[in-house]
Image (cartoon, rainbow, N blue to C red; front, side, top):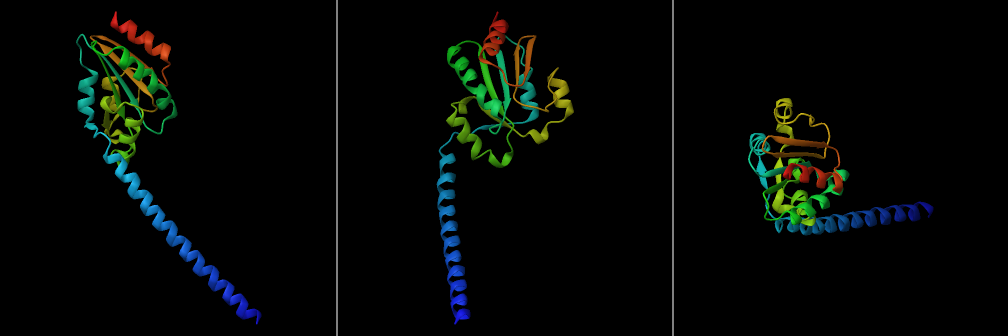
Length: 183
């Protein structure tokens, strides 16, 4: 009798677990379909090559170019975005171009990155760059300080004058550096 009860309990628990795992799989599928439909509403971001980024970094004219290298998973990068957004709003219509360069992995370029940029209001100022294509020459030819080993990194250029900030930039630092280059 004990064997029958024990076998019945085992069978009931096996079938219960199977039903629960089927429910979880169905829920995961419905959640995935919801989350994949969300990014399609996001703005499509431009993809730049290392050569195109180098071209932007080396423009020498009367415009101030501020280029911020970041990733969605980088805490300090996320913390400094509001400072850049404030400057974008403040300097609208002036010869200043602020660009965010996402170094995120390619597998999230069409999902997480567009959602993130939309959420932070930077989708119109963000380009994608495959960090796997960057070599030592890219860094040596474009920067004095940055070797690609850490982000965030902000590069500013106006004419011949440049400024580099490795690590998170505070609002005060950003204001000082931009004001200094605009003089």
